[in-house]
Image (cartoon, rainbow over all chains, first blue to last red; front, side, top):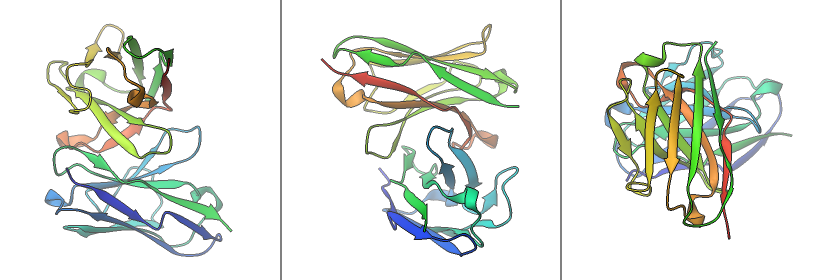
Amino acid sequence: ETVLTQTPGTLSLSPGERVTLSCRASQSVRRSYLAWYQHKPGQAPRLLMYDASTRATGIPDRFSGSGSGTDFTLTISRLEPEDFAVFFCQQYGNSPVTFGQGTRLEMK
Amino acid sequence: QVQLVESGGGVVQPGRSLRLSCAASGFAFRTYSIHWVRQAPGKGLEWVAVVGDDGEAKVYADSVKGRFAISKDFSANTVTLQMNSLRTEDTAVYYCAREGQWSKWYLDFWGRGTLVSVSS
């Protein structure tokens, strides 16, 4: 199966800063079928990006995704207070579908 | 608005059964596949199963194949995950989620999850 490794595990940043999260796959993800989600405690996970770089409906344009093959990134251009959460990636190009372990984004 | 609400979680002994439900509303239930995904304590997410829009196509993770069964109830707009022969490693928060467009297996709406604890 395709193992997704997310780095770093935890980040401490301040509102207004720019952040780039990494998701590396153990093998090439077919058609760049990679999604990013945001998850806050007690809430439903929220889809941010799919197909590596397509923003989901209603997602602000400060979120952007890029990458192909085995290396993917999620960038938040300017952190807002509501952005702090756990972010995880998912590949759905290879069988079985797999998820990364997540990156926790904490407010400094 | 799209809503998915899981229920049925609880504490169960190894070897016993449990049935989870996912109540769907706010969208055309008949036209979407629905997935179950779980997260064990301290672990990442693990995809569990999917049922197709017509309720016929069903795919399972190897870890649950032969023990879990997914189904769609169109009269109640509900997806059920019947979990049999439960093991301690099935302990997790279970989420149901709606599949994205064009049969791509990203998940565009999720529920808040229901906790299943398998323990003697």
